[in-house]
Length: 353
Image 1 (cartoon, rainbow, N blue to C red):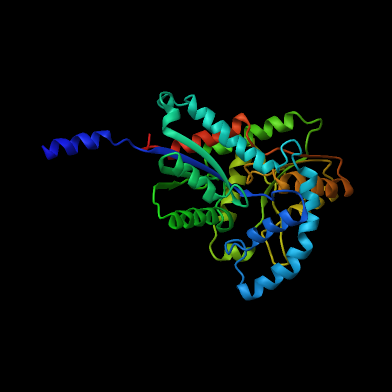
Image 2 (cartoon, rainbow, N blue to C red):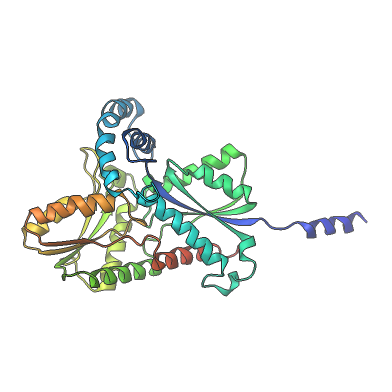
């Protein structure tokens, strides 16, 4: 009799939902001094981002950087701020990506296996690594929705300790603090994924076709990283170069017409080279009249693409003899982007659905 009761109880147990958490870097809460200062402090306090000894780093951070840098960056953020929703483009785009992914899964998306009862099996959340909504909020929301299996998708195509590893550590730190251990998967970097490369090339071709000029050069710009991090074994540089190589092969351009560079250098140490600003100047000085820049390491437009590339590097190019300059928008929440995100999610959920 006991065996029959046990079997009956076991049949009543239902598997929990599958939670999907999209994560991007982060953004200030407002384009003003104190919110920007909070963001910078949280970001630059991460040991994955700045690995210097705390005794050396803390005085620099608190008495130099957090005094001087927020005011200047606040002006830059104000120039790109989404005034309709009162938030940064990065936050608005990441939310939209999560909402559109939920809609795709809710109606079955591209995979007929997901068409029946999909709303009951999945819950989508999104988070920022720094500031709000943070990773802890995202994981708590998944737990509250009854998720017992969680897929985390860091929206970084190329792995770096300062980005992907930081997200991973925060996820595990949050679960440890919650005394909860769901089944967990963290999607790997997708720098050489065939769908990613194809969609990048498609987006680039479409962007160039809409321009009023034919570019002499297409510059592929990635976020920079200190040389010291690469020397420690971080694979970021090699993964960037592989993305660059595959993209060039897809669009049929050699290194001369499609060079690579690295932007957003911070501090006085040696970073990955060539630096984007120096490369933009070099191309203009050598006679390039039309320049297109694409930033395939960013899943969504942000300060680095909209202001640093779209404003600062544009000015450098025009001041040095260039005539036409354009930045290809990131994939953002476009249909192409959602096809990629859906494809990455579907691949990682094999065995769970």
